[in-house]
Structures are given as structure tokens and as C-alpha cells.
Length: 148
Image 1 (cartoon, rainbow, N blue to C red):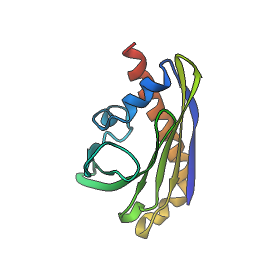
Image 2: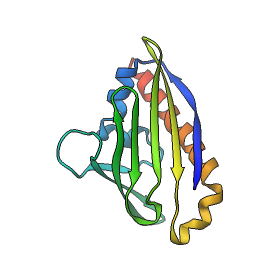
Image 3: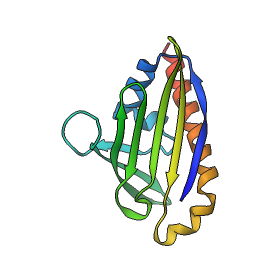
Image 4: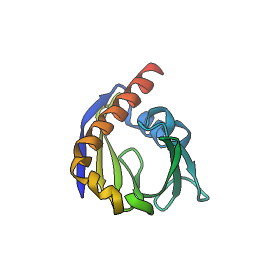
């Protein structure tokens, strides 16, 4: 298991605005680093237990991830876990904290677990996921602050 924690990044928007934007699945491909396609596969509003399918094109193939929301605390925390495949057990968590009424600190923590042939990636997963978290936070900051 490898953990990658991105340093928090301050976004010049309220916690409520950041939360609303980042938990709208239709916005995820805009700020999430892999440009994945996201689709909710369970009925009802987004919350703990919601199923999500995420897929990316890599090396001419489509790679699909089946995810489940494991934490959903409005304006504070959102986490998903891979529930199948060679990355099952991997969790990605986003934590929001108000700096003041108009700014938000966003942090991301990934706990990566690889199975099968992907286990060879385990030693480098921490730094890669920390870098990915910073890229996502910067993307979200750029998008959110350009809307102000």
C-alpha cells in the first residue's frame, strides 16, 4: 500500500462553491487529471454507497474503474474507493476546509493498492499520486477562480 498526500491548495471560492462544483460528476472530467469519463451507475443523489464508473483511454485501450462513494460529508469530505480490478481497495479522498468565508483549502489523499501485475508500481505510487493530487487541485483552482 502506498499513500500519496498532496499539499493543500487554497482556492479563492467558498467551501460551498468548491463542494458543489467538485461533486457534480459532469464537472469531474474538467478538473480530474486523467480526463476520465465519469458516470453514476446507481440511482439517487450522490452520497455514501453511490456507484460510479470511470473510464480512461490509455495506450489505445479503454480502462474502466468501478468506484463506490465511501465518504460524503457536504462541504467537508468526499471519498471514493475502487471496488474491482487490479486497483481494488484504492481510495481517493478530498478534504475541504474553510480558510475564511470566501476561500477554501482543498487537500487530496490517495491510498493506492495494486494487485496482480500492477504490484510492480507499488513503490512509485506514493509520489505519483501526490503529484496527481496537486495537478487536480491546480485544475480545480484555475476553473473555479476563472468563474468568479
